[in-house]
Length: 312
Length: 310
Ligand SMILES: NC(=O)c1ccc[n+]([C@@H]2O[C@H](COP(=O)([O-])OP(=O)(O)OC[C@H]3O[C@@H](n4cnc5c(N)ncnc54)[C@H](O)[C@@H]3O)[C@@H](O)[C@H]2O)c1
Image (cartoon, rainbow over all chains, first blue to last red; front, side, top):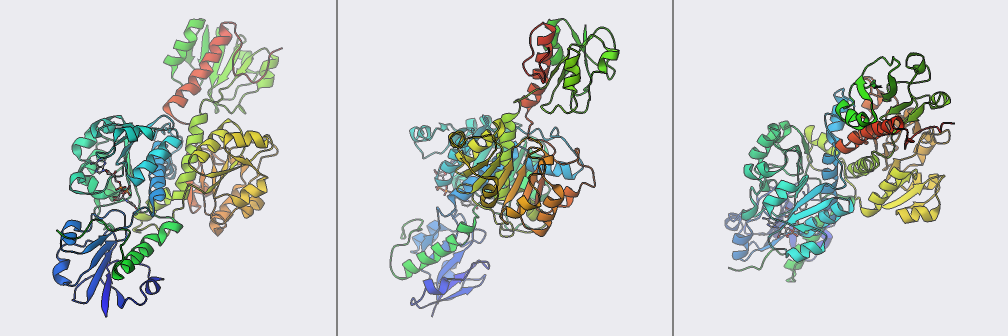
């Protein structure tokens, strides 16, 4: 019988057998994908599927990540070799946008640091200096599905919103009530910079030491997208030197982080455990949708979450 | 002429810029004494009553940089011809921002999630963040700040319920909410925000009975006053898990002492009476008070006084 390999040990299995009934496949959780019987390999965002899987699984038909971002798949190499690459989008757009807004508001109002301040024996807001949310400038990097919602929530919350996105027409940006700007302008004007671009070669370390220096000393950075968008060594240095006021990050270079993760010791940092996508409704959605897509591919139908066409 | 300021954090340069043109100099002094003292600037820790006139008989105005005025004997001072002033509405936007910030911080679990990461836990499951859009925000109280919270909640796509004894349904609807009885609000809300002032009718209104009506997955946000809540009952509800959590910017004793019981409550965000703060509101609290002092010294009526003079 053909095998479907799940690299994610947390992948929920309820409903999987029913969805794949009659397709002559057996589902197995393992951290090594190898064998002529393997037709599909599915992963979570912290697990990588690189081109070497083609040698270990010569009859591979499909790979997938149960996430929106697909920087963990070698999409081009796999698709060139005829392997379908799947991701899931849209299952958590509201959740991520709301989480980013909650983090931005929490940073401006100092919610997290004030809680620490009280528990360290302090009182009164002065050492943290909460700021007004209304009228502050939210800078959205990447106006895709999620970035647009973040912009709308920022406007709803009384913020002025600026955004940069190389592919969105400035007129469309203005139609959202958002001011289109280039990245340096966005960095220099925003009270909070929030990242919603995908991690691709062009966006790796988009926020490097130079970008951080362009930010205002009282500005905050929110990253609910991918850790690779930010040069973490530079971010740690900027936080330690007080070059920016603080940051909130939902993504780390290694997930789950080890005890020696440097970010655990950076000042003025709110850490989240890759949580922005979560709500009870979104919880099982990416897994179910990916398994449904897998079934479509095995039945010879068109999947919904295919990243690009196969073939060189 | 002198105006004595008894608050050593007051920015005296700005007070002098405002009051100087009225012919008085503002000085910091803990003693209010002398025939040349015509006004007093004070703060919530500095009680002023009519006995001030025994040492400074020519005081014509007392102004506090706070909205709360329990520390001023307005009646006694007014009876002796002294204007008693406070500042209002200087931080309406800030408190509304902070309240909605805490409400969405609770729903998205951001403070607790940070704690989990630092305790070595990854993934959101133990905290299970919830959606903001479509959730029910319960606002108790329909004052200026309450209306600000209602507008913000509605703009974020929340379904806003309002309980108030001083509001009409159409007024509440125009503000973006729906007026309901208190019991219904408590039973339906994902987050309950207290935005009422303390009166004999609201003191202790969130008691064991009210907490028992709340959903087990509901949060309580209090950026108003601790006296609205029975803190023994709230502590019990949090420890027993009959509500999901709380965010408190007002405690029964402030600053919170090291043995404040709230420090040990689970799933609780503590804030140091911070909702009012921004650099702008901080400045306005001092400047608005100084402006009323200047008005009185120039023979005008103050804007924000507690008692009319006969
Ligand atoms: N933390 C989480 O739980 C979580 C959950 C879902 C998605 N995400 C991340 O969020 C990202 C965005 O998701 P989406 O659904 O909005 O994707 P999307 O593809 O709809 O939007 C991404 C946008 O970024 C823009 N972009 C590309 N390069 C850019 C650059 N250099 N500068 C500015 N903008 C640029 C694109 O043009 C596009 O409009 C995903 O790629 C994923 O990595 C994280």
